[in-house]
Length: 509
Image (cartoon, rainbow, N blue to C red; front, side, top):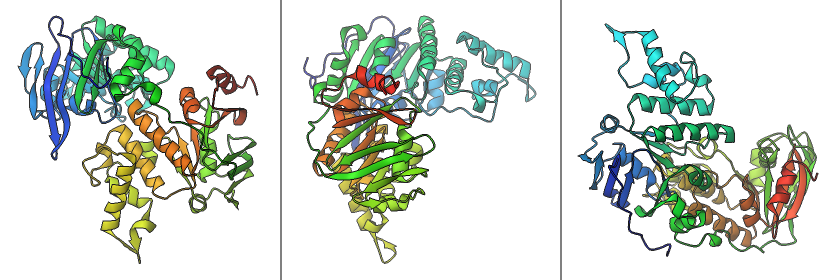
């Protein structure tokens, strides 16, 4: 199968719980969806996959009444429906749970579950014993023993997810749409969630599962629909396709092209770290060269992210030295001095630390580059727009324009905005903390390409990643941390995942 050729969609089997046909949607004249299709059977878990910006979120919002389609049709249980809003979709049994759960932390579990539903009451007074029993019934259906009187804000992430699922059941959901439900869950919590989803499937609930973690899709799902550039490209049984086939269809090219060629490292030392010590980091030393990409791995809590914070001046060092281009940085943790030395950090948490979601793309970029867009104390609107347009073009940010709010962009394009605002400073050293977390393989490939282009121009790049294949494919050299120290160092060319993992556990330290 050619990755660039659309396949015929297999005809549905039996009565469909939900069917979207030939859906189109435009925003400000820009096509977000063109001939998008999705059919969901009762009692199946159906993966919806695609790059960030492929149209998944727009299609979900149309299926749940947030947006109205410009063209196309939607049917529920075989009957045409027209959702004027979210309430209409709920009445048809279509409920979506998003990555940012709409849990109210200051009210009880029972109140969260019954939120928006008719609460048992007499003359406006809630009958709490009955309400608590109703909430308990929905949690029992999920085999969850969460106390219904506990404040929702006191729950773990997986418990909050279970409460959100229970709320969907209270709304009599027959189609449940889950958007990146495992993003904040541990492996054990993911297993618990999968057990619940399988039990709901066995009860006849149709589940649409959106995730960038393809291993999860192949473990959990029955069918997969793949979107690209706003259109549905393929719907297949999971048993009839491979992960490589999914990636190829998503991005329109062979997955072997994911990582660009290496070989840009020089002998000129740019960053020298000697015996660096902080709260978690202990006696770390290494040198990074111009044009080199150094990957830093390790288990959670190993000190890898803390190392970047020390380098960026976001944490105070208690010992050791950091030298950038011959300039010794202050140990007290001076972000301004680090920026002046030409070293910038792209943080792990892009939504809380990297961008202002309620501000536009151009304002986000300008805030980190005021010296480029102002003179005499006055900000030039023309310079702000020009800088944003150049950055959007260089990083291929998909948006309606530089004035679009960052919060309305896909996750991958939000990450590109974080990169854009820091790259506009033209740094000598780029620190990246999990630069591709939560984004699709197509956007990952674009970021990898840009990282390698920067390295070829002489930029030194130090990148933390929890994905061993990413470390191996992207880096020139890999440092592995364990309990705050460097436990192993290997060239990335020909590196072995098993060896790296042994370093992660400190076995070869």
